[in-house]
Image 1: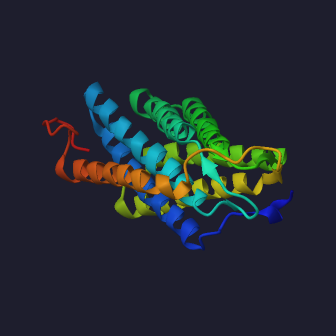
Image 2: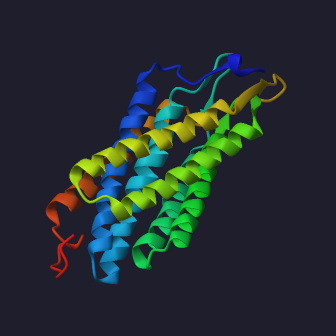
Image 3: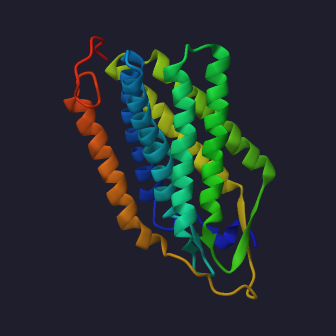
Length: 253
């Protein structure tokens, strides 16, 4: 079947708007964490702030944005379920690959080659997270993809990741950080909806009724976990002047 058999905004425009807002919030927190990571002297502190940055950018700005945007996805002639384990795995992939990319920026001397390499690694990982999340969808049919648009979505993910890592190096002021967060939000949500534009559904009545978790049954635990992550990261940023564990360091971030 064609794109006419599915919807990307079945819950209204609040899903893309909320997804964008969440992506911006996660990006802003992540940029603040990375600023702290680069300012720290102790390797342990750098690692902790990098981990916090990966949770903010990979877990909130990217994966939570993806999950919220998927609340608008629906197949008009069938029931949609999700594989909870694959959905959770996609979140883990997002955090891990972003964390690896960020660690290249925070733990080593940054060169243009390393910056691009980190961005390519993280960008492809983010695209992998998106399509892993899509593979969690269960319905009486199958998804097919426009490979050209898939390639464009992967390119956007790589460019967005490189831009995100570059922002962590050059953004110094609050105003610049807000502007960077807004741009990152556009890039991340743009990648998601480009990937969704590549999707077509083909219904097949011979396939058994889908077995899995309804998307709205996943909403409560996902929002609780996401809210806790944001709250903890904000509390850490506001209460720790230097070290994320509250210890005193000579270098102030």
